[in-house]
Length: 533
Image (cartoon, rainbow, N blue to C red):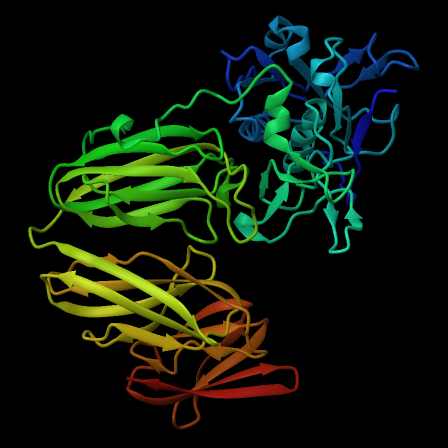
């Protein structure tokens, strides 16, 4: 009997009554490919296939509007972007493809003929040539675009020969037939062939499948091994001599690419016309904020004309990367590649990306080097930095972020200082950068350094007792009330802290001297002093 796999719902999801059937837009991700994966939203009657043991199956159209269909298409297309296959909503593309190189994914609320599941598929049916489809039951997935997209890629993966990515304990005992992944936030990871509903960063995987802890399934090898298609042709060479060359037009350039394989590196060459500020946004394809739907954790490396590495840019908790630095005139190279992170393995971080660069002419007196370094020293974070510039420093501020986006000051160091050490109290990965202002009024940021802290306290803590402005930064392990008092005992600020890094600004803390801050939760209270310099 032919094997089939179903994806069982891990949570009860409710159908939104506000969704309406819409005209399905004709979309294709790679029209030149001969292999086709057809996302069928507008209903279909299945007959004469391996599913029809009880007669025809009449599948109703998905109850989804055009915007949701577009998002589902884009998510699934990105999952299959590295491969030479066309993801399409156009039935004519499907019908024109060879019968043994195509698959229809029916997205339908009609599930009663089979039972309560997220979807179902016959393993290896992509190459059968009898048009046996696979199914995604949209209503049971709450018409949720994220969950429908994950199920569509998952079920299509079964048809291409993939079994579930499973999880096992240290004794080789299966703990779940579906690997749920790990982590949270933008880089929270799960295998596409596990449970991808609850993580943002879902990828193909090389790990144990349903048949045992030593039965490793290399998803990429299976997909490209026996389905009549392989990876896409590389779009940008990985050597300096063959690097794709681009130029600034109106002080900007943009370029797109795809990381097709785990060892793929894209080299981009550009020429900086004169000394100035070079800014680059390197963003993986996404369908919304937080790089939703991205399959590529980007690492960007900058080289000079001598092919000497200048810096590596790969924020720890983000999938995108940013360069903001000063460069002398000359030729430079950008190397783009996929990487894993603290949650995701260094495998199958693949997909499309966009680079957007800008150049701003700068002073003839350059900032030659601004480098921040960090290391763990017991329970303390030690930071040190190098500044090589012709201008005089007027201010340097160490900033910290828990999410890689919002940075807040820890301390304003003396202009001749080149190091800082403290004991952090926020858990997880903390990202640091140095803001430096020179006497010509220009401000620059260093590279970002990520350090991990696992020894957080059980109460709120000041990042520093010394402040030079009316702003106080507090790390909190949860929700606490706070109040700030001046030296007479008068309350000058109060409010509530949330979990993470909190910034409190009170214009009443105007003069230098000592202030007190009190944290309260239930019957417990803690008090710290603040010294305004």
